[in-house]
Length: 160
Image (cartoon, rainbow, N blue to C red; front, side):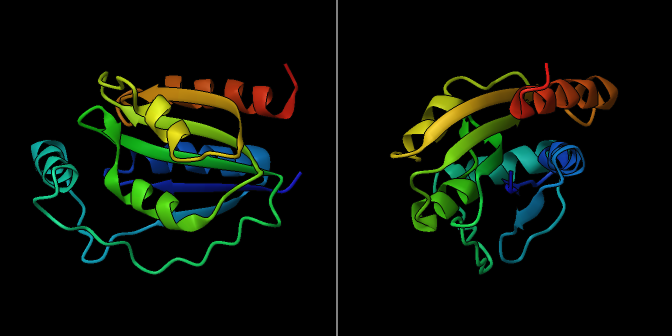
């Protein structure tokens, strides 16, 4: 099964999960980047993300060519900002033309997931959302999160 992991990661939380999925599923990795991207941590990351989510700050994506056609499974990963999927992944999905695909979703957050997975699903009409996972504080709980990712990989491949 040909698999792609498409993700956005500002603080490297989603990158940690994406790398685990790439290794465990032999997947292609597609990382989305915003223009003028700078590493941010802690409060600076939160403040920047909230300004982007509220539309105060623009964070256009760098050009990314992604053809969903050859993939049997597309895994989409995103941080949660203000209870919603981060704006960069929402912008990507608005233009990606992904339909008729088996999709798995994961979110990374600090305990404020709210309805982020439901919002992501609404951005992917005409697809089969087959699995979902949420990872809490991946960078602070990396060993626990890696174990959770390994279990999710078993679920995705049907090896329980």
